[in-house]
Image (tube, rainbow, N blue to C red; front, side, top):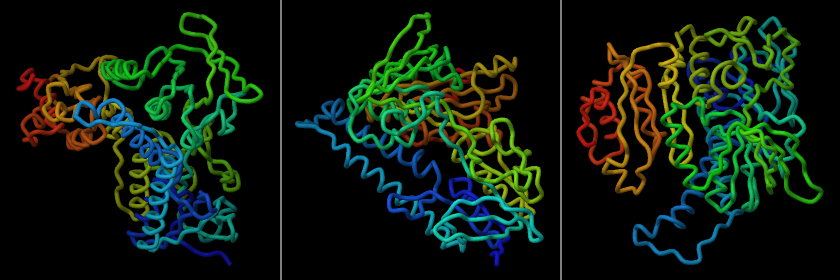
Length: 476
């Protein structure tokens, strides 16, 4: 006999597990199905983000940043280091520990909030009198019926045709997080978030890294001024980035390495020989095995589930959130949608504002932004004012020894409403939160300029950039 639930969530990533917890908090009898496995075959909820994305990449970035600091910057502080080495196996082991702590934390949260967890792959069977029948294929096969279904099955890495992932030489984000030793030469196809972050990890540890990007501009989605500053910093660090390339044949020689034929921006034929190749050319919605046809769930040409502005699908009481639907593929966007859907099921008015979703690239310098870029404002013909403040004029940044970059504000020319904030520099990922709050409350640049910020702090650069909109910075 099928087990009955008010809400069944398929997928335990950021969108799914958060949706399940919020639904349970609202009084619904809730189940969450997830099939990620750890090395021992046990449950590993958290999706791509926790297992092979956001969390492990930040762990490796932190380790590699410590190594680079010791190798190149400790001497500035009077700290001498002799015989510096890197134990890659131990570094990977620490990363795995961080991942497991997050997996276990989610299982604890399910227990705390009385969410019933099923370890296996969930799929639609049919519409039934009580809602929808869902099959769970796992160690113990289960049959569930839920009145409301929330699909949160995430996304998969997109492979290059003719260069499928083997996770040994041609790597997705998964394989890039499990490299066993520092490759002498590393190639990266795609200069997006994953490519830059993983390229940065292994470059810091000694790899000669070359990034091949098809687009003619670097970080096209980022504010041009920020992208230019970041590009200069990466080049200075030794990260080689080639733009406007056309990838040709990718070969794997008999014994080791990868050979990438490509045409450069000037039309010249080139070949890149590397030990490992990371392919980071985007991600595709994951609806594999969902059996959407069984219930008539509508997908678009990309394989994404079609939803409206409230994350409703074409089927009554079936919802979808996160990477498997339209919008940016960001863990925090998925979380917000998961909460909003649970609240909509409860008759509340869940809210997700796509205009105030922050973006972050965890390189060094970090890059973070929210709202519109200067090129977007120009394209729509909107009158605006801009103000920026460099970290080289910030006392805390000087003390940190990290003065690369700046904070930039864009505000409406007439109303002074903040339209976008862009940061490249130390702890940009943390500083952007103030801008998100300000924009959500329709604040003006003057509002931020009038708020007292602690001294000495990096956040003073935010205040000074807001002051710069009115051309009245105090420290530059």
